[in-house]
Image (cartoon, rainbow, N blue to C red):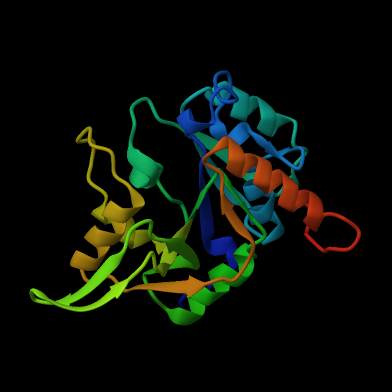
Length: 249
């Protein structure tokens, strides 16, 4: 009889090796995932979200100032059932390359970027992946962007319409994905080339793996600029006020 799908079948991988060049000078002496939102490092928020969802096996991928993340984890007073280890990148592997080197121990790998701020329920996400029965499930959300120039709509060389600075909606990967372990075999060996999540999905599709997405609808922010960091802190302050409900990290 096959083992039923359950959170205990997940080995989570938190990508926390980023330098955060666009967030200097704050990242001059610390890795980007150590920057605080609401007084808590961003990677810690992700780790605690995984643990709250019932995941007890986590690997944290570290690189720049790895010592700061290792030392901080020692202070987090995590439940004894949780086992955390570290994979240190000695050369840049891309944001998904480490998945092919870690040696995922369970049926599924759940990848989450450690510089996200979100209240996404990882348990609901994982259960969605189990129900869908796909090889890979991507968490997704929609973003709107207004073009700064006029768009022409054409058929060959015939112009059908002209739209002045239209607002476009795009479906975006939220930096969170669930993989069946066997899908990770598409990640190449030690060839010295970085391998990102886009490379992984493209290679998996070429190999015939089924890839689906789930539009989560949760609060989500990718913190890549000083302005975004300020905005994340402002939103978390609002969400943790008495008038709002936001689960603690």
